Image 1 (cartoon, rainbow, N blue to C red):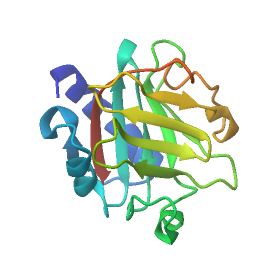
Image 2 (cartoon, rainbow, N blue to C red; image 1 turned 180 degrees about the vertical axis):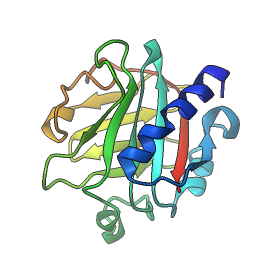
Image 3 (cartoon, helix red, strand yellow; image 1 turned 45 degrees about the vertical axis):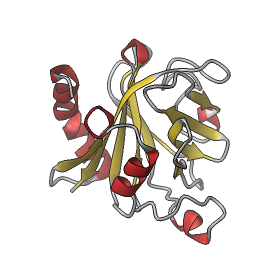
Image 4 (cartoon, one colour; image 1 turned 135 degrees about the vertical axis):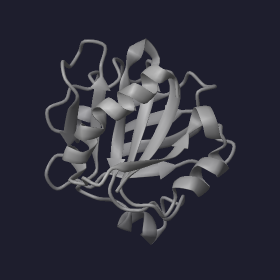
Length: 184
């Protein structure tokens, strides 16, 4: 991590603890700047681990992400296990929105919805996506500038579609780095 990005993670760790109700610290388990951008390595490292915070450093200073309460146990969206991985306690957040939102903010799912994180196969330019149904953010590898965000206001409370990342589909965005923490 650059010093600035490392400092941002440390400075905002109090929000992660508060938002997840997990107050015993965190462990960094993946960083695309250190561990590379292989889907296989990413998937092997984070699968079967609960309480994950995915922090995405995007273009224009945007820093956003998601929390996954339950372990991700499958890549197959048609598997019964994929349904078991969904949780109403998953949420999205922004740490820096380039002025659209003043402070770090958590956005919870609308009552009755269960969010998911989908990991992508080996040669896919998309590393993972998160959200509920068609309300999703597709996070592409740092080598791709084709990530996109769709319909967040349909599934998350108190957010407009373009607030998290600053754009919405079909306009793409670029993610420069992804850091995954496990909340302890």
